[in-house]
Length: 530
Ligand code: ZN
Image 1 (cartoon, rainbow, N blue to C red):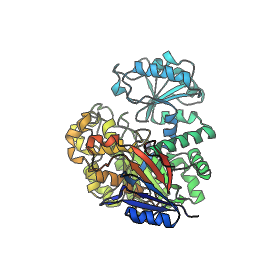
Image 2 (tube, protein in one colour):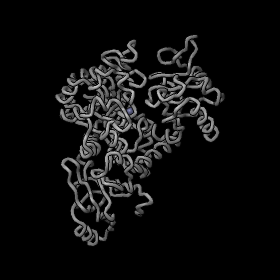
Image 3 (cartoon, rainbow, N blue to C red):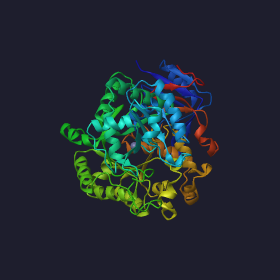
Image 4 (cartoon, rainbow, N blue to C red):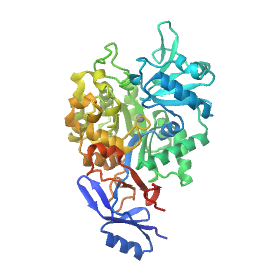
């Protein structure tokens, strides 16, 4: 039996570039069949025995496509202590004490602290945590996801597991004592020790999917997906519980297996596809591990770190390209981007065809933008970094301000662009990202704004790159990204018209309902749809 739904009496944004609207949409068997007026949409539904949903003038638009995020980490976060915005180490202790009583997991996990906000004016250390939790292992990850702090119990377990607790990955104080701060691959080693069972991972993944749908995200790009997470996604899919579309970039260690299996970009179904692999070239600006071409302005002793050698990166890029797999390479500093551009330069014919991506490009020189455009590479941008990295001018200095998050310059140069949140690094709520791209922290007093007002984007453009643009990054623009006839009915109903509200109001727009493939996967109390 065919499933027919007509959404009528709405202002539906069919697409954003150029803006096109309609007042009704008819969905047949999960795909958009008709876009036009309410009268005809009602007639089609009645004729085919379908249902008519009167939206009473609400705004409808394509669902958001978050091109770079981490479903498993988001799920773990939803089930761990949220430390974002914590203003002092004392406040962390208080929250941790309370959380440790009600959580039963072996490891106690928290995430989101930022030492820049601490009243104490110093980093948190293991002795701070020992004061409140001495007997269970604790890991609290910094807001950037590249640095964490462990308590003494956790350090003991990590050491017992045979991990070398050495600099530069494990910090020591003046006396040579471990402080509990762990960085980059050191943190990676620690995370590997915290194992989740299949059941737990399924729950976390499903929680994250529900959370993303509630915020109007209908497709996600999983950048850095382990084999366990891919397996969890497949189980959810087989149980018809994968209510979101997922596009996976597997951890590069899995490349040999993908090659052996002959899995190429696009393998899977419209619900779940393998696109390629994710590789890291450098770290983060927050931790001063992003690789810059010149030293940090606020710490001239370092210019960051390459977390992979040029040769290794080039080898992976070549092997993946030849295997028909898309690449997503994390490069935040401009020298890391040089490494990626060099590696991509050696597989030129594949770059445009496979839409090889660069993740973040936070610090990018004008000639690098031009180069990205010339070779046909794509970039996944996270506009909310502008607000979170409010200290970024201190890190890079005023003379490099024009190189930081130059979204408009990147778009104007013709580079293929998609938007994303890197959730849980930034909030999954797309309206926070839309707001950040439209204001660049002007209302938060972010001083990058003063240097780069010209990089502010139009709301319609932002919505275009956050829907169609992101779909392009995921090779999915023929399936999703606009509400044109023939595409999947992946759409959201919202309580305000994003093109009409004051910029300040953008982040308070609420998603009233989310539809994926013609099925309502979320609806708020305000709009009760069965
Ligand atoms: Zn990420």
